[in-house]
Image (tube, rainbow, N blue to C red; front, side, top):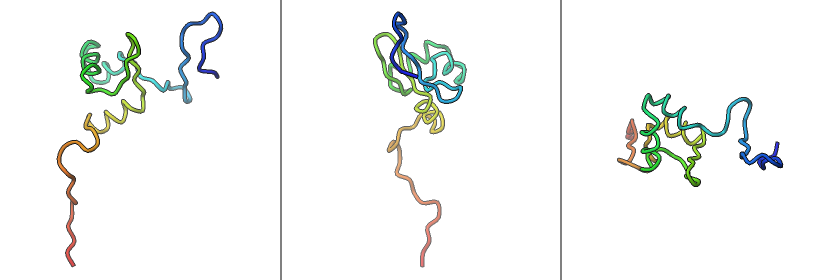
Amino acid sequence: MSDLPRHGDSRPRIKQTGQRSVRISVEDIARRLDIGRQAVYAMLEQGILPGVRVGRRWIITRHAYDQWERTCGTRAGAGLDAQPEVMVLN
């Protein structure tokens, strides 16, 4: 399947893995977070949610969103340095 639109079809093709799209919609994110769509757009604008703006549209990959959700939105390297849970002394 090509990512390029067919002749006469101006919609971009979305790659799919199995039955799941590689992108997630603003509506799906709003539903998962139990917030409104405008709140999702505000979070995208502020850089809280991972996404890329292309013209008037936002592209959010499912992988990036799932990773954001798993880490509660924290970025790598943010916050305090991790300390070992157990310190072993010999």
